[in-house]
Image 1 (cartoon, one colour):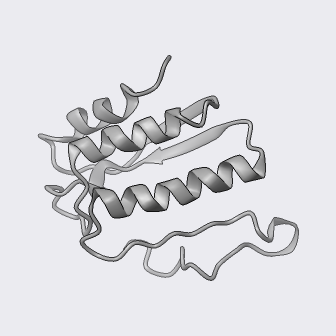
Image 2: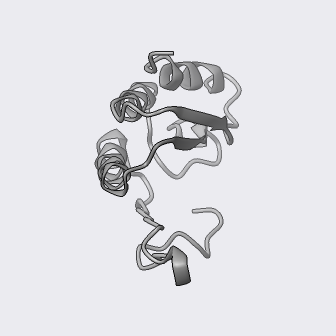
Length: 118
């Protein structure tokens, strides 16, 4: 998926940043369960690293009805993702990025953010 040239599983960073990257590419058509499995691995890495803050680039263009999506995430999937991130019990900054199905952007963002105990 976009940007097509980065984010491969064998890219780990370099120099002082070596080991700081974790890329978990998903195959086209990946559904909620596949995304949650990757997110569980990412959350594990966040815990192992000892992170004090999480920044989420929330692209809801992964929704199954989004015109540019090659994934099949449902609104319930965004809820599950939000629960997983909230379960880290860390401060979270969320930057809302892609989303091109006008009818589902808001519902999906709300599904994700409503899982956080603000």
